[in-house]
Length: 142
Image 1 (cartoon, rainbow, N blue to C red):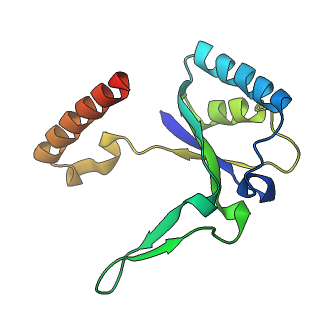
Image 2 (image 1 turned 120 degrees about the vertical axis):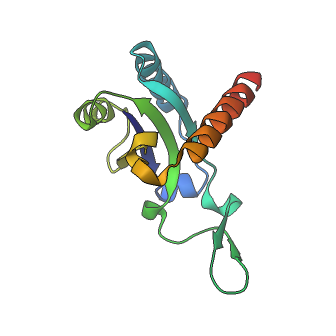
């Protein structure tokens, strides 16, 4: 199964504080463990919400709101995409992450094709397959 591990924002990340060199070294070592174990598929940090936008749909046209957004604890500062055998395995890995006190992670299982059942018709499945192939090629080219 694949899971997305969301790293929640806090006042520090929303202020654009990039942390200390030691923190990056520790995280780099943790990421190396994840890669060596075949767990980590992707992982990135995100800029503060002040550099982002939200788009809300409804009414005549979508409404765009530029950041920053309130409530830093409800925002996302970064993410990993992991391949694990179970939620318990993901939790075990997440507990080892070198975060400081007060940091928060959220683990969510990624929907797979079979999770959609009959709603994913053969035509839509074929389209999804083509799109995955194209996005894989783009990722390899970058």
